[in-house]
Image 1 (spheres, helix red, strand yellow):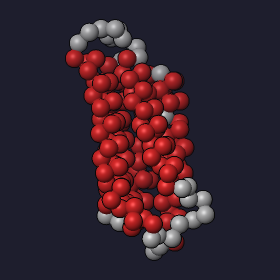
Image 2: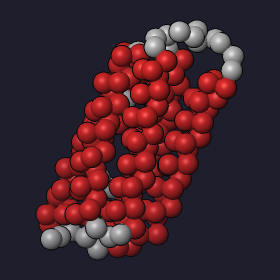
Image 3: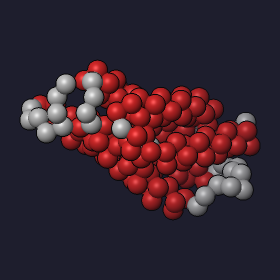
Length: 163
């Protein structure tokens, strides 16, 4: 078992994870932004938040994800648990980007719904794996779980109203 302060290349992993969060956020925004005109044409449920909420919420959630991963990676515990956490975290980041591509870039609420349901499951899995390393890391991901749960219901409603 390594200590949290041990120098080495493994200390670069949290930095790379933070940079990956920034990259995922920017790619998601790049896929979404040019398609907001299309999004405006869709029928939406009454609980749809104003568009201005999304660019506030997502950076906060990605910052919490990066902090959570940083703490998980540096937590005492088994190296295999940290590696498992990194895998779940990476899949979670990838699915966030894939959702933006499916829903906005492909103009497909149906595809987006499939991806966001997988995203939700992976977030739950990530929380479970992170909790083994540190309860704080799991708690830091709860806002993401709540937001993506809300986004899943919004995605479903948009799909349903526009099928």
